[in-house]
Image 1 (cartoon, rainbow, N blue to C red):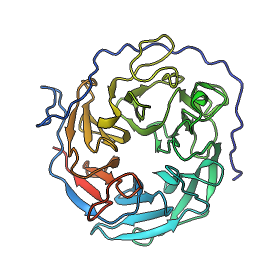
Image 2: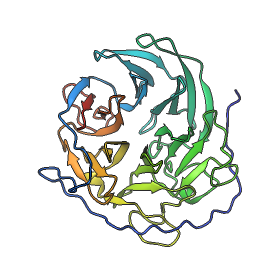
Image 3: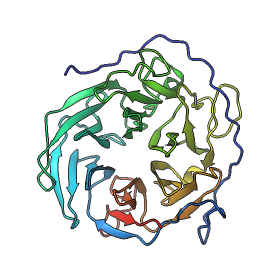
Length: 359
């Protein structure tokens, strides 16, 4: 298949409806996490370490019962066996890690692995057939489905996930070019939506464009609730990190605003936090809550779906930086630490994968 290279488009972006935040809080770390009474949310149970000694892992995805993990700097895809043994499935060619760039998000769809990575002069999304059986998986040939995404040493975004509509969603940071987030002709500072082969869906909000939402600084989390509502986490600058409800065609304000601004034309986050307590990366939805892995904040945050202004926190400072959280086939959380990426303080066993049951 020919590589899809997106060169931009001409469109007029209409003003988005303003979402007025009904409840917001600046979090403190509770001594005992508490959920709102009657929320129906289920608190995490006792964690157990499944895998240790990974090298700057970034993302977890499941092929049925088999977990796959990406490593940012080695560009390896790893397979985790039921007994916790780890084997190399393959190495993504052409990855050039630098700063926050490298092999980042992965997703599995129809027996194929999708991977977002930094190459010499761009970020791109590729797909690979997953050949063989669990325990002997291999990567097929690379098929680049989306390219021409600006790359930098920071703000690369990099989370990818398939929505309930079968489309691939891609978070893209501003790559250090702040104004690009408001430019509808740029892929930077956006959440993108494409078909599994990279084609632009006909029902995207801007005709002929993969852009699904704009005005993002560095989004790194994507998850859908049972009603199909899309949520995304986002790194702010110095003031506010964000949890957003994503609307097609919505403008989330960066760099004009950061956090809750109540300004016409921009959609406010449903919750915001000081970066020292957050730096939210991967998110997952399970048992009535959004779970958010926090890097600088070094904690797992839980936000009940029926009370988006509330939160509880777990494991604060216990395991260092948390990069990703996903739901396994049994409904438990898998949490990925990120202390060997050059910014954390590695401890014995880092980096690791922990499993946390719910209910």
